[in-house]
Amino acid sequence: MSLVAVVDYGMGNLRSVAQALSHVKQDGQEIRITTDPAVIDQADRVVLPGQGAMPDCMRAIRESGVLDAVLRAAASKPLFGVCVGEQMLLERSHEGPADSLGLFEGEVIRFNPALTTARGLKVPHMGWNRVYRAKPHSLWDGIDDGAWFYFVHSYHAQPVNAADIAAQSDYGLRFTCAIARDNIFATQFHPEKSAHDGLRLYANFLKWNP
Image 1 (tube, rainbow, N blue to C red):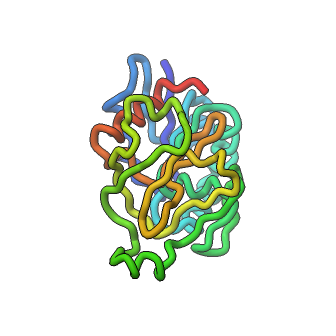
Image 2: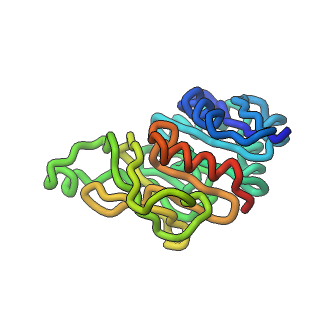
Image 3: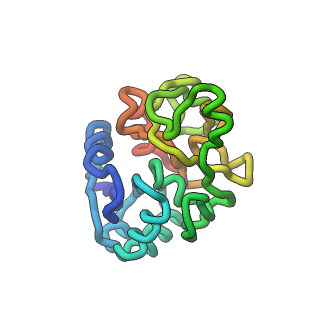
């Protein structure tokens, strides 16, 4: 049995993520929502969801007791971050004073109102948008470049290293909407809300061997 842990620290769209993963899981895979660091340590793959304000998510992940297990997972096994689960992988956020996980150099910034308002765009960025890959990656297999994914966010990642950018989208400016390095892949958009291509992305993660 292969275990896929969906980390529960009280701040994620857990049921939708777990249902999407269950829909595309391979034979012998178990999808388990967990608050237990020991289960995260035992898991073969880990999914880190998140929604809300990034400082609140960081506080919750520390208080829940799963922080060290998440860091161990990020160092050693396939890990997929979703929405604020992606943002927390960077060093800091303009959303508020909170140290992030610091696994990727860079910060999380708010959409510039001068750019969005001038183009008639509202913040938060909410709804479907095209995603353009910035580099080849196994998780893009079977997904067209420019495929549509579902977003709900006011802040976005700004990595220091261009090599960490896995995909970009446009909303008043070209912004990073997915990051990847080694065994970690993370998206600002919600695969679990993104129909066929979102399910394909999760299916690719469940068979990915970085």
